[in-house]
Length: 164
Image: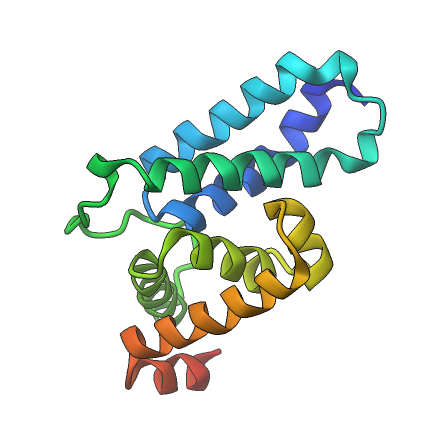
């Protein structure tokens, strides 16, 4: 597999994951681009191409979490969420916007765990490997993240369950 083939096959998925991690399409594009640039820089040294997805996830999550720690990124955006490319079903769009808005309020590390576990479908071990932490940390961050989501969503959580 060439870098170009990998890029074409995975660019939309990486961009979507970046958006779910940071909540802004422009920043998601920047993070995805930076991750692909880093991958291209290391492409010749990577021997196990079956681990490329894990490498990209780890690079992407680290970039988003590191950026969220910068003082100027602690400000909350009040802008309306951009079009997510979800099918035109208004309930699905509303549900997605509610979820993405709620994810924005969760701390970056917890948000990363929730996105990787529940939206990217990774198990605890794969999430721990992507984040470079223990499985116990993933479990506790998942619990804290879900608790934070419940606090933010309140009554909206029942609406999400009904439409999901």
